[in-house]
Amino acid sequence: MKVRKFITIAAVSLALTVAGSSAFAGKVKLVGSGASFPYPIYSTWFSQFSKANSGIQVNYQSKGSGAGIRDFLNGVVDFAASDAAMKEEEMAKVKDGVQLLPMTAGEVVLAYNLKGVKDLKLSRKAYTGIFLGKVKTWNDPLIADANPGMKLPATPITVVARADSSGTTYVLTKHLSAISPEFAEKVGVAKQPSWPTDINMIKSPKNAGVNASIKRATGAIGYTEYAYARMAKLNMVSLENKEGSYVAPGLTGGQAALANVEIPENMIAWVSDPAGKDSYPIATYTWMIFHKKYADAGKARVLRKMVNYCLDNGQAIADQMGYIPLPANVIAQVKVAAENIK
Amino acid sequence: MNETKNDLLQLPNLERQPFEPRALKSILLSTITIICAVLACVPLFSVLVMLIYRGGSRISLELFTALPPTAFQFDGGGISNAIIGTLFMVGIAALITIPFGVLAAIYLAELGPYSKVATIARFSAKTMSGLPSIIAGVFAYAIMVITMGGYSAWAGGVALAVLMLPTILLTAEETIKMVPKRMKEAAFGMGCTPSQSMTKVVLPMALPGIITGVVLAVARAAGETAPLLFTAIFSEYALEPNDPTASLAVLIYNYSNSTSENQLELAWAASLVLVVLVFILNMVSRWIGSRTRK
Image (cartoon, rainbow over all chains, first blue to last red; front, side, top):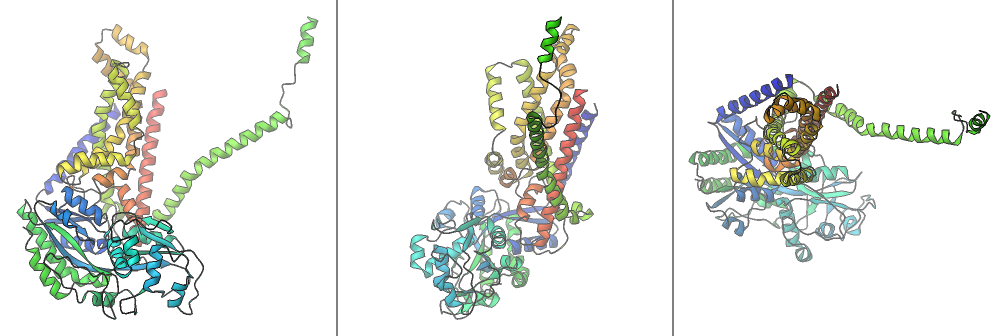
């Protein structure tokens, strides 16, 4: 009979929890999911924003850009985020219209794990060769040529790629396809491409997973957002840009890359191969995706408020977190476009 | 007389001789089985030692009361919402599956054990007990998340319920069947109706066994990640059942790949908490189970 008493107590306490939590029904709660690329900065923004506004709670989960767009199309989230923007045919499926807003920008870096090798440089031929599976060992002449005097081991190269549908992969393959016709033909631009089969590859979920895999495997190289690689204290490659100079990832290289980008009306702009001597070659905006029309006007108002918070207070911390703050003219443009969220 | 004595003398010596081949064989085989038995304990204990070593340092009041840290919060934070979320969702799942499972078990064991419905139900329960947990998640995503228009603790509870139901159903059926027939006959003999014999005699007798099954199912559900990834995902905020909800399993999954040392430490601590929780549940089920035999 003790057991029966226990069950009663458990049931009653569960009922109380439910009753208690519904007391917060007055709160505006927003749920978003998607890109892992900006997750560290988004989660920081949203937790600060929620703290500053007592009636608001924004929950953003990092699932990968592809999963975020799917959630958005299924209508299970209020907003999504993607570094691959959104395809025309995907947007056509959304009845209430779609508004994309670039919220921050970042760089895709090549991070590696090789004992005793620091400040590695890779030429365009070398890094496309790695992702085509043609450059197979670390002492390949294509790598050695750009790094005179460096002692490179004969360790085989393990490429770490994303396992999920990823905007980071999209940005990388877009860049590689722009600089190498062979890559464009064999792999192409995709969130989840079919990599060459003879490549020595590990696949990991999300940006965090790629970083963890690089950290674990000697001889590994993978692509990830700058903020993640910096937080994971991984070595990053200086890449050869369009003008032939080697640029290390960081704020200046990223800002230079995005400096001359014009943002069109749909707010989707790509920089697949930026010009300029100081430009870091793989940089991208990353977008939040909203409906143009929300059934709940209060929700739309809070979403606009959230966007403005990210644009005003949020950009100030972008640099210290490893992202590129939006240029002032872009911020002004995004603010105007945010008014479309109704 | 004489003849029998001779027969006895011809019998082989049955006393144990230390260096006889069969004695050696026996020692050898016993040693192997002992070693295997010891090795079987190694995974559990090495996991426990590792968890205490890596996660023990974070065990503090803050761990149980604070909310999780963001990626750029380099120290502090806790897992309170994940602990509550796990308990809450497992609780919902138990509330759904216990009445459901036990009533179905009564039918399977007592009312129509050989009927077509019972055969099909038993077969589907046995098949479902081997169902990959991620399928339960996809199922709950389709029937709960999409129709309700969002991730929620309710959807998580339903996904866990799908996983718990077969265990509860099958163990309840077995224990109800094990109630001695004499007891039921005695109840009928004293003028009990079938429902009286069920509620006053059979169910009380079977209760410890049913509870053992429930506790085991709860212990399994508490550690499941895949079904929750599709239904409750995660949240950095306190429990609100209509919204995405944190759980220990998903917290471990998310943070174990984190680049932030602080979140990594929390993943270890959460693993320790989860293992201890499951350990306690198992002990409880053994304790209840041992009371049946007396």
